[in-house]
Amino acid sequence: MEHGVLSLLPPILALVMVIITRRVLLSLGIGIIVGALMVNQGEEAFINETLSQILSIVTGIFWSDGGVNTWEFYIILFLLILGVIAALITLTGGSRAFGEWALNRVKTRIGAQFVSAFLGIIIFIDDYFNSLTVGNVSRPLTDRHKISRAKLAYIVDSTAAPMCVIAPLSSWGAYIITIIGGILITHGVTQYEALQAFLLIAPMNFYAIFAILLVFAVAYFKLDLGPMRTHEMRALETGELTDKAKGPVPGDAEDTKPAVEGRTGDLIWPIVTLIAATVVFMIVTGIQGTEGQAGLLATFENTDVAASLLYGGLIALIVTIAIAFMRRLHINKIGSGIFAGVKSMLPAIYILIFAWTIIEIIGELGTGEYLAGVVNEHIQIGYLPVLVFLLAGFMAFSTGTSWGTFGIMLPIAGDMAAATDISLLLPVMAAVLAGAIFGDHCSPISDTTILSSAGAGSHHIDHVLTQLPYALITALISSAGFLVLGFSGSLLLALLTAAAAFVLITAALKFGLPVIYKEKTN
Image (cartoon, rainbow, N blue to C red; front, side, top):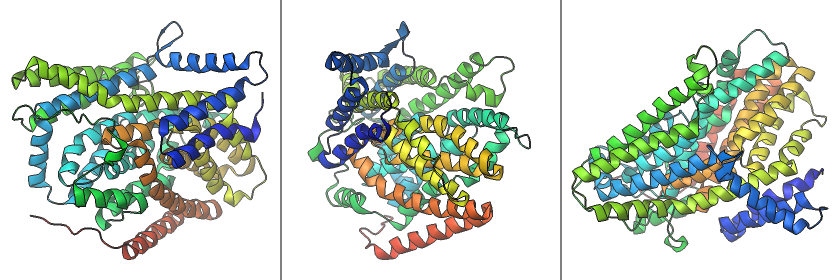
């Protein structure tokens, strides 16, 4: 059944309720029920059909097609493993030792934020991996400098997806290049191959570029806006890195304290093992999934990200447990650390399951298809890139999936460019990629937003509300760039326009905001 504009009701209802009630699970639950009722309206015993559909979706997260669901279920297992690793590292004193080591070398809050941002840029292989790893590695350092967990979650989230979407050798890059290749063949474009087209598109992705630059500007110029300012002031004045009134946060094993005198390597070696093992398994699963010659791009295109994360996590967990025994940690302490680590990740897992469920129902309602159809309205061709950017942003915001937005919007953008002006093919595809990241950053039902909260140890709703102003600022800058690109066709002029907008907005914020702290280097 076609639902048209009503297909927007469940995601918008859930998003509005999240903002009003600050209760993520309740809001997502209501959105799920309303959406499922809409899908099954007109059916006999539609209440039973609704409940059956919801149960089927949730069950499918763990078991589908007669076997274990190796995507969602493996991601959940990886989260649990990461929680256990973090708890055991804390028990062995690794986090405290790393914090003390880093504190002696990174003297300022600005430096601590820069280190976290650089880690987010370097670890670009996969957004899930980036969000969880960078948050956990950076947390001891940012905690010692009294940087709020909401600020860390923003840094993590605003470097993860933006880097993955412009890096060809990432799970995102491989996926996007595959779609682009099909579009080029469909429209008979032969002047460049799919990889070359992706590399040409990357500098047109204004949102990704300026989202990363804004992270550094926010850190250096102390541009703490709205809710972020509240979190940062509380962290500086009271030392509370999260809002205690909201209870425990995902990834924070609050009932674990260092049980022995640890070393910096107790944190570094598990993380290095996690990164190395995951990369190795991404290559292995990519080669196994590639038919014919397994080149570097084909390998990353066919890699099994979820399985690689799980296998890498298991090896890192073994190393972490071995370190715990080497530090003569009592077996009872190790057991309590495992329990605390699992418990610390449960809130994030609950939110993730609810988000996956509502995304599935939104797909049944045809929300994405409806939004994509809006593009076919009569518009002036020069406005095409910026309108595609905004539409892709709203689609990703409503559906909680940037990859789904890529899959739906990239072919449509290609068709529109081919039907109007083929020279706009690359700009409109860049606009889709940029808009999808923008919407992903704003959406509380986005899995990468949820995982960034978990990795940084921030309350999810706090991360959503503190990141939103920065996402909107970056979207404004990007819109200026896409407008100029659409009407002039000049990438250089569009980049200069966006850069000028970035400088002006940054300067206005810098001189319009009072400083809430001054750096001390000793």
